[in-house]
Image (cartoon, rainbow, N blue to C red; front, side, top):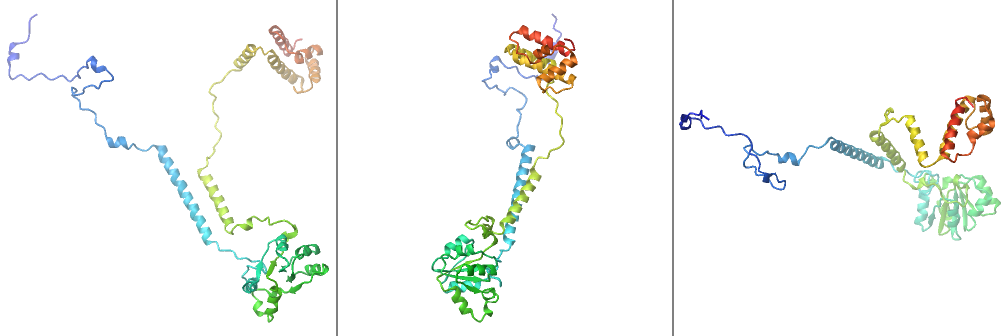
Length: 374
């Protein structure tokens, strides 16, 4: 073969050198070993650079941002509820007792001043809240003061004053006074103006009042109420044990809970029909159920299914309910479709077949009956 390359080309010092190849070098078979790290020093391309800052701090996902927002919203709602609770507790004024002639009532209609004077004189003042406690506290060394406008009967005053050393009726009703008199219980009578805070200083004879109420070491200051009709029963008013601001707190908590439910609760829209994943034809269901009966030799279940279907179709044709009495069903079907009633009764309500051939004959007979032939 003739060499077409001129010798001057090889000896030309001004000729440009050949352009280096840009193809990647082929890896040797040894470099295909997955457990060996290939040598990339022969590659002319620079190695890929990565931003370590971006890889270490990926951007938050949308669901993470939404979760943080919900947490912040819940925390804000809880803080507002707590602030409202604190304001209610601080701004709610403390309620003062307002019972007429109450031992702890500092108003002009109370008896707190007189009883404090008795306490300073060394008299122990007991304020029971029900007749059982009053009768128990009114012992042989105690005076019992029955206060108020609730009328008591003879039996009630006897139970109250059975152990009391002295009895004082303060601003009592005429019925209570008559009951004490009828029970022959000696007692003293004081008017409300003689013991009230607003009028006690106007009384000229304060000393006899103090002697009447403080003659014994203990004074039982009992104010009957309408709930004391059930004698022998302890106090059943549970809400009276709580501070007055508890009701406001309960209302605020309920409002907060309803607001949170409306804010964070799931909102139901219209019902959306969902397509079934698979639609199975009725013929396939029937064929599969028959194969299941055949595999388990459940001739009785198969016969019952065939008879139930036949009774339903025939009863609709005869104008009666399928759940009617068998005799009624057979009679109406025999009148409508014709045929012997005994034969129809045997087909619809007879015994279960014992063999497959009997089941086949029963199915054929039911098909003929429902088709209108006998």
